Image 1 (cartoon, helix red, strand yellow):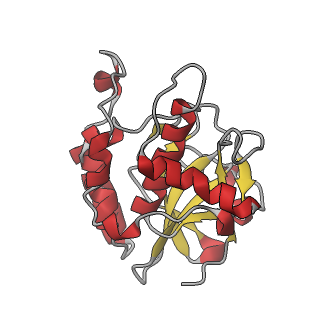
Image 2 (cartoon, rainbow, N blue to C red):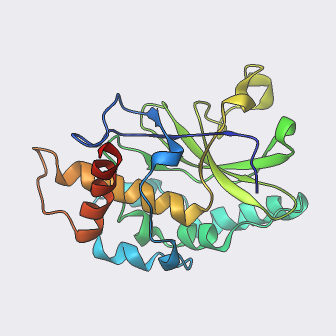
Length: 220
């Protein structure tokens, strides 16, 4: 599928391997390969990461995932949209979300409705936001049951089309072709960031070392 979006990966720098300010639009075509053969919709590869403790108050403020997916399913059905199975699985398994740490304190916030993006004949579902609102990630879905992950500087969760600037839809950027591919890359890059920082030093896994070696190979 040829999507009508510019391709980029707006994320953190990987010190000594991929430099730039936070949320630089890194080249999509120069991203390291990821093990897509492992992506079967269950996120089993996340099991190596421990559950994070967000404190006692976190669970009280977290929306009921079953209720959230029910509302989203109902709204999707009215628009002839099918949510990806991997996305539905991830929403309803909070333990998966709690295994992903973020260097910029990004937070999973799953929308309960679809937002129509008229110029591109599709709908978006916001699911992840930077803590300071610098970048927001969304599913982009079509009625042909095709989808991808797009990033935006607009928070479509709270804004309505009347709030958008005229060129808002033009700022959508393709960041991954599947939801699980996005989650994997987001997870592994944050793990690398933490483990190579002076505050949380730890040994990189073989997969994380291979990920960084890709950038060494680009320089040779």
